[in-house]
Image 1 (cartoon, rainbow, N blue to C red):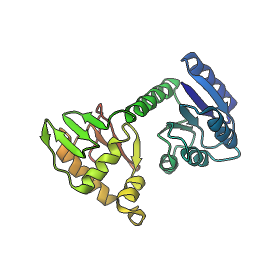
Image 2 (tube, rainbow, N blue to C red):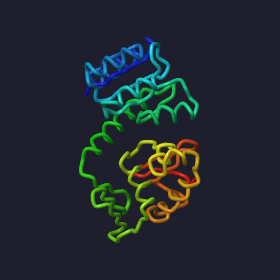
Image 3 (tube, rainbow, N blue to C red):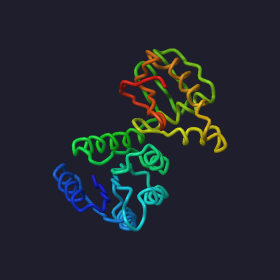
Image 4 (cartoon, one colour):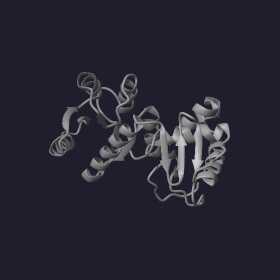
Length: 231
């Protein structure tokens, strides 16, 4: 598997290149935004790791450029820690975000998760979590074998989450795609419909394990379950 690592910090670049090579990855590096785009075109990596503050071209612009022709998972590794920076990168098309300083073990785990999810999305469009089965082709939901009736809007929210397992889907993305750009600030819509989905699909709606809130940013679907709060 080939990974493109783009960062203008030579120490970080060297550490990641050595560590990833030891793990068996074919590593390509870049030290600027334009170099990153060129390397992505020339080498067609399976995963991209991008810093946001690179010279020549901001990392968010690199994400936009790559997303014009590639669906390869993008992991942002950046010193920008604000929620607005994370949301901007994720809305541009990044799949995950790790802040500096970071643990190498965490980065490796994120890469493994991203490659698993990419493989999962190429599989048959049936998603299972807990006692729930979602058939994306038939547009049906079963819970413990019984049909679950969803409203058209509930289905749209659920579909967008389950198609991106483990990934943050921002509030802006959901609001824009479902209600249109004029409703991008109407977060109450989302809270209402996510709450309804939790009542229908979560074992304990007040303590969701699959339809999780990422405070201040959006929602994340975890098929294997994780501790969460109903916000």
